[in-house]
Amino acid sequence: MMLFEPLDSDYHKRSVLYHAARLSMLHDRMLMRFDKVEEAADKVQAAAAVLVDVTHGSAVDAFQDAVSRNSSADFLQVEAGQTIGL
Image 1 (tube, rainbow, N blue to C red):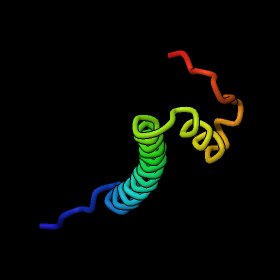
Image 2: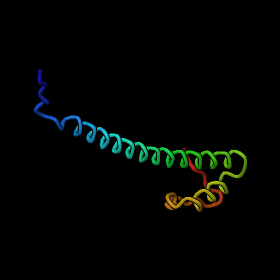
Image 3: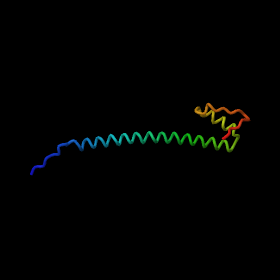
């Protein structure tokens, strides 16, 4: 008895290549997400440090220090004696 090979004999090879490419793409996306999560965690940690400074010292001094350390907060300017309304 003679067995015939399936008509699409390269299906398994293509499947292996497809799954390897898909796994590689998902791996890259996961690493990109980790970078974004790490960046967000750094921002939260910096904000928590500012909060600790504010609660343990002069709020104006702590806020001015935070503004001078963080370039994204350059638009905020507080003069001595001013308050920040929340």
